[in-house]
Length: 160
Image 1 (cartoon, one colour):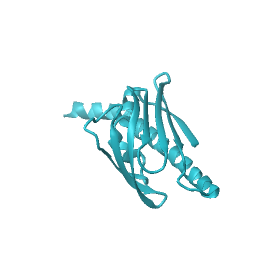
Image 2: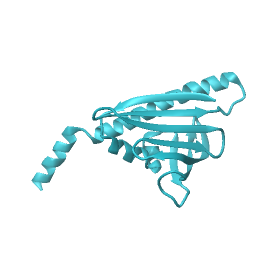
Image 3: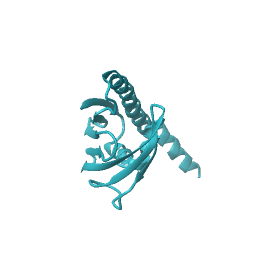
Image 4: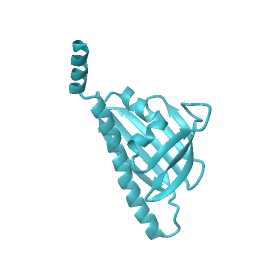
């Protein structure tokens, strides 16, 4: 299996990172251009055992894929695996970094191509996507947590 891993430092409280990451239906917000819709298919909405169905466009081709969350450690780690299509396992790991969060997104996967050259092209494109996704997560969370935004919000409240 191939392995890719990207880590980014996010200047936001771990609770905010967790709120975004642990809500799998919000994946399309940060996996733009790839995941179009993520639907929870189990009665259970959070935690180990949750199942999902993902619809999107991967490198110009429409796809659908199913997943199950196999590990859930509150505010620390989520592990999920594909239950349809090509073999895939993802891990979201959060570590406190003195007021910030080190967020790591790693994947282990077996590319769906028998030809090595195609696997290499796929891997490079997937690595770029992973980098974009962790940056999107960082940008969403840091924008939401800027002190100037809080000051503006507080000022607006006093004007009401």
